[in-house]
Length: 189
Image (cartoon, rainbow, N blue to C red):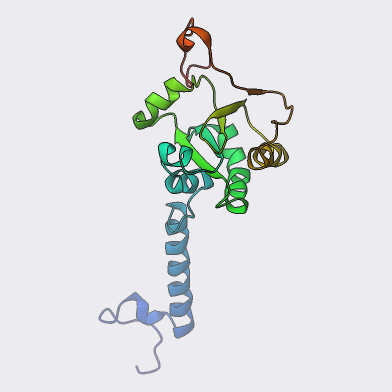
């Protein structure tokens, strides 16, 4: 009976598997575990929007540190904001120390005062500030890397903003800046 290859009830089904099959089974199990881990977001690299927002200076600090400031009002669900994020990250990396990049999430109640103060009614909305923290322009809508380079170059060089669709200079409004209708950035109306 010693040459009988059939498993005995005492040793179970794994005894019938050869060493090679056991290793193959273990590799498949490990591979499946890795796939499940990855699909559940394990070791996920932080998205550029999340990283920039987390690393942003507080707005009052950025506006008072003697560097020009680029503020982006964004939302995590905004496709245009997400598509612009790698360019914003590159701008922040390239101009770190000479320009402040601040991201404010319009869905965070903490920034509701800023959303109202800067009359954010669509996103992405960029607010552009000079070295003295004074508003000098606004940009509405998604921007390409080239357009962002032109805007930040003008901020850093203290030259007039480039002429781009959706970009305008800001000026003080007479009468306290009241608006006829209040709409939010999520209203799309």
